[in-house]
Length: 258
Image (cartoon, rainbow, N blue to C red):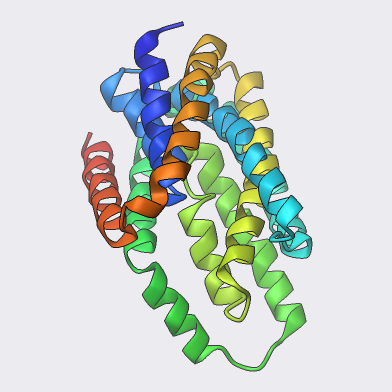
């Protein structure tokens, strides 16, 4: 185990506890840019890291009754098959397999970070816009769009490990504008667990998971999340979110430019 990885896990965990986002958005680029971890290994390891850490969040939301399991099921119906197909295609068609898809992963990660930053900055405006422009309910159309949203997230998350958080929540705001924010967040976190677990398992099969790195990250992140959650009420959200969004824009641009 490397103490630097544990410190990184603690730092990212604290940010997740403070803001509710930032896990994959920060951990993967941190591993790639700061520690020089191969992008495919960083993505694969971070996916399993997310599955483990978000399982606790799902349990908490489930006990509070803030998970809409029908939404979670629809998202998974799209995301799980899309994740499997994406990894099979990358593993078989990319020159050198998943190891040879470095450029694709970096660009996908950079784009995902920029989209996540937009979602973080404009989350409230997006929610208000969705409420103002929501038409009469059409359950069949909404269900189909939810499955499609899951499929898009499945592709993005499998390649970049980013998207299951802020992007998923933003999409659900449009699809379910009348649903309380807490239930949207809870449903999105619950969906992230099977998606990241399946995508992470796929990366493991392809040989892009570092288990020692994973253990070091989890060792630091669990106390980090606990600390961040406890001090989150003392730090204004209007201060944290712009800082996080700015970091994502800078990192995303750097990854795309590489």
